[in-house]
Image (tube, rainbow, N blue to C red; front, side):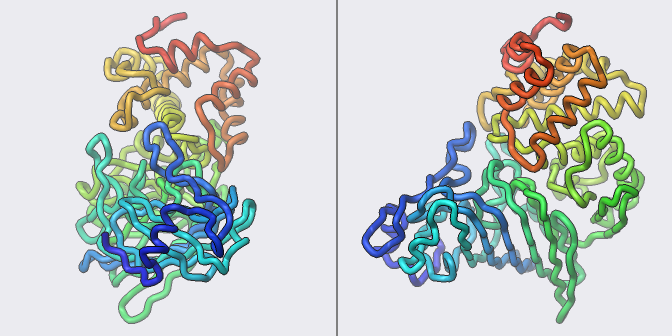
Amino acid sequence: MNLRAPAATPFLLALALLGAGCSGGVEGTPGAVGLRDPYFPGLGNGGYDVTHYGLELDVDPAADRLRGTATITARATQDLSAFHLDLAGLDVEGATVEGSPAAVNRAGKELTLRPAARVEGRLRKGRTFTTVVRYSGSPQAVTDADGSKEGWLRTADGAVALGEPTGSMAWFPGNHHPSDKAAYDIEVTVPDPLTAVSNGELVSRRTENGRTTYRWRTVEPMASHVATLAVGRFSTRQSVTPDGIRLFTAVDPESDAASKDVLDEIPAVLKWAAEKFGPYPFTSAGAIVERTGDSTYALETQNRPVFPGPPDTALLVHELAHQWFGNSVTPATWRDLWLNEGFATYAEWLWAADQDDVPVGESFDAAYEDEANWAFPPADPPGAAHLFDPPVYGRGAMVVHRIRLAMDDDAGFFALVRGWTKAHRHGNASTEDFTAYVEEETGRDLTELWDAWLYGKSRPPREG
């Protein structure tokens, strides 16, 4: 444990762990450790909802060093005596709650803060409070249950932060569960000639003494797993679509030429997707394209998906569709991931039908014949190691298509989809929310469809 917090005497550390309403302390009870997610029960924390993250970061890739100050604004959902943040690996130098030093304790990836007695009453249910955490160190990658890497990934000339599902705790403290979305201001200082790219819109850029500070702002709610930061040598381009969406692309020079034609399709893809899924839910869009080999997968980071090298159009369509399905309408728990991936995969099928004359039924048939899609039901992966396996994608898309076939009304089906993205815009939704919505809007009992295609353990007949 590397913790430097002078105010945290052994007695106060014990209080931070116990969180009891002791004499002279803040009345209330400690927030829960973890939100009991089906696959990551210790992820996230109870007792509060974050409304805003203000991150001030200094990144030196050559020294493999990050120094940060996180200002977290949250609303208490109970009377709090103590609360928790998720943070992996980095050293905590100190913390305050409402401007007063807080007792701090570190246990693995769990950071426990107990406010000073003088802030009693400010952490009552419904009250907004501010926490500041100062931290530093060498941020690390996080290994998923399936063996993939996320968190802080070193690249040829910098780093890229990828968070799905648990990696964001590798570079800033927070309530790292998709159910707690917030606005962000991310200010990053890097040595020249490196560029720092994040979510949302670039608010300002200033250079002093060979170092440049970039300030990025995301005003729409964002889950922490789709927050990103990429530091490196990038070719950047800015423009505005005819619909007023601000575009920002950052491409590694080695990937620039091979990426240009596909990235030039972003405005067309956004316009096409808006016709299918409803208005684009954000004010900015774009892409970050790394050098091939810097990372091993693409990720739908909000506003600005990250690609591990020059993307093809199908992958671009998939990640941009996630801006509706996953980023605006965010799963309530990780068990609901198929709602992200099933719709994004179905978007690929729709694009192939509209642009390449490949009927959606043909894409469905190919997915149906793929044995990999039948390993388990899309709404019930057998464990965290299987969250990103083929059934979540291919069979998830089949569920969407079966709804379309059951309705036998294309106009009604797309109205249903647009209604879904509108009803849960910038919010969270579960599988149960979705099935109830579809049945309410269609006026039909679709139990047989859900039992066979969404929850069934065997392959149902293609027809029927």
